Image 1 (spheres, rainbow, N blue to C red):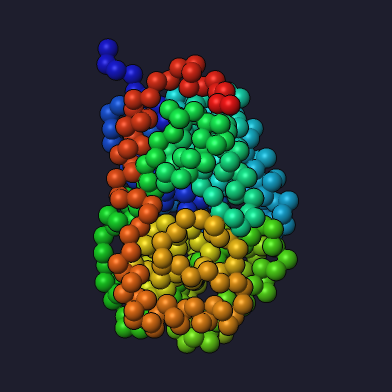
Image 2: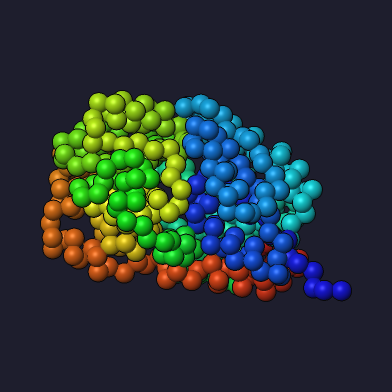
Length: 389
């Protein structure tokens, strides 16, 4: 009899963390030591956010379970109801599939609902990106820390994240600093020309400088999202640059942002709004951009690898480790405008950004994760946790 395959169940609820997971999934899927299956939930199953489960299907992974949980609600209560809607079907799916390890990323509701449910079922959870710190007041920080306490294997991105987990009382032997696997796929994505991009998007960006905007709502500032996004859009319009605008995530406040995007796009031909681009087009949009605006983690994690200037707007991402490609500004039109003009016009600054080193990894993180998943012992010591102090 051959060696029993290790069954890994990866859970994904949004495009952003699927991009982090993908290089790991690809390696697990092609490795004979593993039986990889996916549980797909959240925004992946929503037409409003681009029905990105279709991208997962196209990538060829086995989807063992789909859990529809999102409440189409723009109030704060919507997110916690959406989280609650995951727990019972997650428990039933985990109990049926009986994975050896469940793999999850980051700080969205899937992370806490997965790790908590699995802990009650004595199933080890491997968590990517624990220990990260953002001083932005967002609920995601609490979710990230709580997920780490429920998880059994930690794949941290930076050494300082490892130190955070040690301070939280996690065992040293559970923690593996691997970098960010999102960079593995990001750096390996094929290059396409501006002409191809223009043809694919049906929007002319062949010769002009252009911006990219990815601005997500902050759950603690829902009441100001409409005003804040208009400060950003007014700065972009006044700059005169073309701008490609990506839909926000599903957090409370996103309705106001989407409404503003559609309103401005109808009024100004320089703006182009999209719900979801396939990976090749999206990365090449960033490769050819002059500046990324908003508050996406892409500006912190991926943009340094492209030498791409970033204007981070508002509180989100504040306090996170970052390279010197990011200018932090408040939700004020003049601050945003001055920062983006500097980012696209100051040649000394542009050249300095092109030379920076990305602190988040070298493109080999997924291999490190797979080797740990292959070799770590699945025993009671792993499953039954104690605090170290």
